[in-house]
Length: 237
Image 1: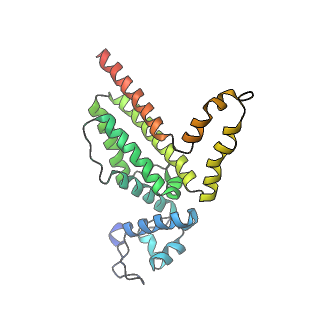
Image 2: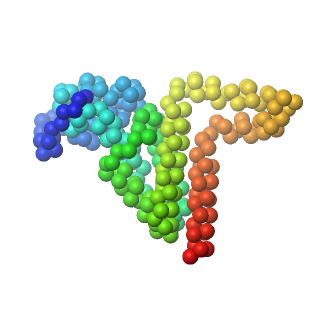
Image 3: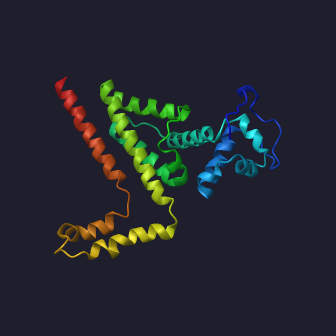
């Protein structure tokens, strides 16, 4: 896709496509998300999208200027799905934990799209809502504005980094994933204590733990550090 664009008022296609559907941004994004999961980054082409939608590829320019514009819309859709049925409880730590786990789970549900988009800043409606929501949780908990931003930054970067890391693993073919998991049992669990005492002492824990994401543990560590910082701030007030 190139830098062409149609004014918003003229974007909506009024006639059904060959498959009997009316094009919309939502339909294009949903189709792009499905194709990315099926075919990877190469799915983001006008020709492939047009074929999947039963539409003339040029009609996509009514909605998106180029493929990167579409990718940002896909990234924003993933954020929107995270927030869709989330409701705050008033417990800032529980609320952030829930949000973080939702971000991570959403990435694992669409691993190829997450790998492509986890590091992007969309500036779109769902991302703006997420930034507003998380900052609201932190400010409501009593974090001063500079601290709220620091914790927000660490929280979001941690969630997205683990999302990209674990999504990349989930996007591997199953035989490759199984082979990597088997290394902990086949290699690490057999290293002798004489040469590798620390690995040998913890081998059974490595075998059990390393096949799972460490994000929940890392998230709890971050929340504990944030809570300790909030206690410190309150103690000085």
